[in-house]
Length: 133
Length: 152
Image (cartoon, rainbow over all chains, first blue to last red; front, side):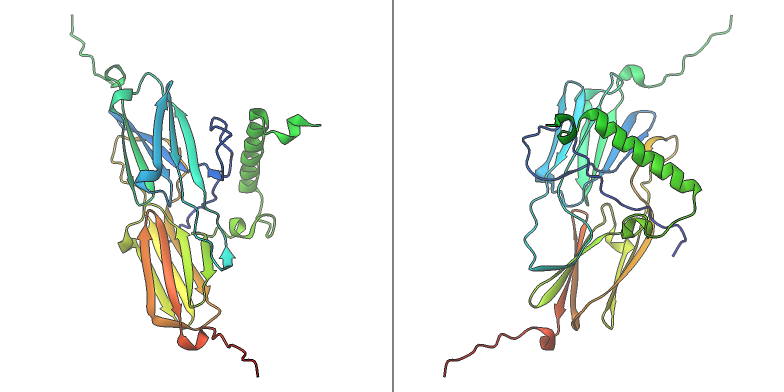
C-alpha cells in the first residue's frame, strides 16, 4: 500500500444558493475536478448513489446546473455506524462564451459524472503562421 | 426577529467558506491537535461507512465513486471485515491544465469488527452507482430467535 493517504471525503453540505428553496431534502455539493485540454473543458463530479435517470443537467442563461437525486434509503432497523448521510447533489457553473454550449455531452458511470464542454471555435488556440518579410 | 440570522445570506455563506479555508490553511502550519474536530476528519477516514444491523444480517455501505471493481479488495477474517482499495486519478493525458482538483485519490484501508458471528461463506458485495454495499449474513446461532410465550 502506498503511503499516500486519501484526503478526506467530507461531503460539503452547503445549501446551494441558486437552487429553488422549495426543494425538499438534503443537498450536497459534489466534489469536482475541472481540467482543460486544448479542445475542451472536462468536469468530473463525484455523485455516488445517483442513477442515470435521476440526474438532471440544465443549461439556462449560461448557467450549467447539475442536480442528482438520490432516492431515500430504506430505513434500516438499526445503525451500528452512521458516518455519512445520503442526499441529493447540486452544483452549478457559469459558462463563458469560450464553451460551445450546443455540443456539451455528459456521461455517468460508477457515480462519477463526466461533462465534456467543447471549446467554441474561436477559443481553440490556433497557431498563426508568420511569414517572413 | 433576526431575519439576517435565520436566513443564510450569500454573504454569510461566503464568510463560512472563508473561515473554513483559513482553518485549513492554519492547520497546515500547526501541529495536529487530536480531538479538535470530528473524529473522522482528524483521522482522515476514507471511505466513510454506514453499518446497519438487520435481524439476520449486517449491511455495510460506503460511497466510493469512480472505482474499478478490480481495485477494491474485501476480506473477511474471523469477525473483521477489511476494505482496501485505491482510487486512481483520471488519466487525463498530457497537455492538460487543472482548474480544480477536489476529488480525492489514493490508497485507503478500513477495518471493521462486527458485533456478532457472521457466516464467512455468505458475505457478498455489490458495487453500484459508486456505492459499495457489503452484506454479511449472520451465523444461525447469532440470529435472534423469537420466543413466544404461551398462556397457561
